[in-house]
Image (cartoon, rainbow, N blue to C red):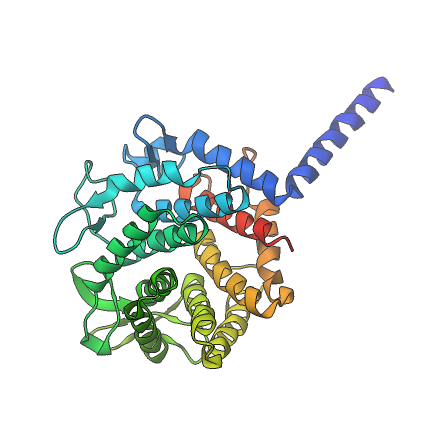
Amino acid sequence: MKNIILTISFCLAIVLNATAQTTASYKERIAIINKNVYDGFYDAKANLYFETNDSAANKGNHSFLWPLCAMVQAANEMEAGNPSKNHIAPVMKAIDQYYSARQPVPAYQAMVVKEEVDSRFYDDNEWIAIALMDAYARNHKKDYLETSQMIYRFLLSGHDMVGGGGFYWVEGDKKGKNTCSNGPAILVALQLYQATHQKAYLDTAIVTYNWAKKHLLSSNGVYYDAVRVPSMKVDSAYYTYNAGTMLQSGVMLYNITRNKRYLNDAQNVAKAAEQHFYPNGRLPGNYWFNAVLLRGYIELYKVDKNKAQLQFMINDANRIWAQEKDDQNLLGPKKVKSLIDQAAMLEIYSRLDNLKL
C-alpha cells in the first residue's frame, strides 16, 4: 500500500510539474529562455554567440548575423519590461564584431569579420536599426541613433530606380527586390523621422511604401516575397514577416500623417494575414518571422485596441510553449535547437508580457 501511495505521489508530482511548465507566466518563460541562451549558445570568452546548441552543426563557427538581429530585438523587449537590466549590451558587443568598414558605406556583414569576409545584407542591417531605434525611443542613447543613421546610409546604397524604385536584398546582387528589405527599410526611415523630424526620412518611407504596395501586394491581401528585376516577375512565396513589416508600416504612417488610407491598408493586411497564415490553428514554423508579424499586430492594437485580433498570435505562442519545447525547455520542433528560435520566443513572450493584456 505504501508503495502504491508513493507511486501515485510521484506521478502526481510529474503531472503538476509538467502543468506548471506549460502554464508558466510570460516572465517565467522569459527567464528560462534567456538563461538557456547564455548557458548553451553564448561564447563568453569571445563575446559571441553560436548558431545552434550543437557544436558539430556549428562546425566551429560563431553565429551568422541574422540570429543576432533577433537577439537584439529580444533584448530591447526585455529591457522595456525591466529597465534596470542591460540586455542589449552583450548583444551589441557581438554585433560590433560583424562591422565592416568597406566601401561604399560601412555596415554589418553576415559573418564575424575576423573569421571570414562575407556578404552584407540590407535586411540584416535594417533589423538591427529597428531594434536600436526602439531602444532609442526609450532611453535616447546617442550611439543607438548614430548606428541607425549609419545603417540608413548603407540602405541608400542599395536603392535605385530599376523597376521603379525599391531596395535590393543583398549588396552587389541586383537580380531582385524583396519585401524583406523594403518593409523594414520603411520602418527604419519612419523611426529616424520620429527621432529627428527630418523630412527626407519620411519621404523615403512613403516612396518605398507606395512602391512595395504597387509591386508586391497580392490579390489575397498579403505580400509576395520579391520581384525579379528588370523583368518584374513576382516571386509568389508568402512569409509572415513580410505581412508584419507592411502592417506595422501602415500603422506608423497613419500615426504620423493621420491619413486613414494607411490605417485601412494596415487593417486589410491584418485580416488577410490571419486568414492566410492561420487556417489550421497554428502559424507557419519560423518563430522569428512570426515575431515580426506580432510587431505589426501590436502596432495596430495600440491604435484600435482590438484585443480579439491579437488572440490567434497569443494562442500560437502558448501552443509553442506547451508543445514545442524539450525537457531542457529549449524551443523548436527539431532535435538541434537554434539561437534564432530562442531569441524569437524571447521577443514574443516579452512583447506579450509588456502588453499587460
